[in-house]
Length: 444
Image (tube, rainbow, N blue to C red):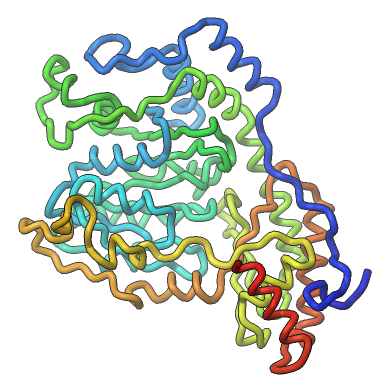
């Protein structure tokens, strides 16, 4: 193997792609065909009747999910986005209220507040876990805070105990966005069950999936009822059902199909095996990368089981002497698919910068009944901005279709690039032109 970096014209360490993640097998195919043979692809009715709760496979998956995670109620949805929207609705948040949320998350975690006319307030993340914490949340609380959405980002369960104590002091509903952390644990408890409501994702690239889909869980019967109503046309159900509190009881169609539910039942059986595989591969990768100058690898605490949805490394350019984009480009040239950052901090998106969502007048940001004072200026969450724009490097190769040999190749790539960093630290000449051209080609 050539020691010359591939980005400078050498041979790459890895010449074949890393394996794609695939969890669908004959079990799911058989389950789908059974639904097709039955001929009932969905059995929801938007009225107060036995079919308000959906068909047999939807209800079966809900029972299985509740049993697996040890909760009283599991409510299937057509996506985790829908689950988050329903959860914020169930909390009672509305115009004039605030919802505290992480800026470093898929947009829906924050948009769920906007959907109900509430204002997202962004708390900064912990640089070690990438999650918001009780300390950063406390800085953002106000008399208008109605709910908190805490994201188990990259599969790492946030530290919920102090968050829940803080929320109880202020009578605030806490929602756990566990989209990336099914099968993870904190202090022996499942991620997704650590707050008042937990929301799981079954989107196609998650640890287990049904193509699209989600599940919300709670031990609170009142919240479960509200989730079910929002899922299925609440406004025409509450009267006949006799629901007294109709705040936010405008319903949607967030219903899961029988096909998705049948696939979900089979996928749930695989969860433990799939997460264990991610753990073992991540441990191999961490062992190989630990101690490399300029890199901080994820290290789970003894009471944490990391879900490793993404394997996330912090990169310190002050140690290496080269910018992160050049380091990442060198890794990709060696055959390792990596991405710089994860998502831009949400508040930097146009909706927040221009403070306009519904209609032309800027609702909910300009709502006259909102008495708070929210800012979305750059610098609002400096840790999140630093992580995204300067430090974070994400790998999506840690999954059950990969092997220990794949992890060893990844380690070899990192080690080669780190060894040859001096070849990249050039301020003039052909090397600089090659690196700049490689980066420009990637951006185009």
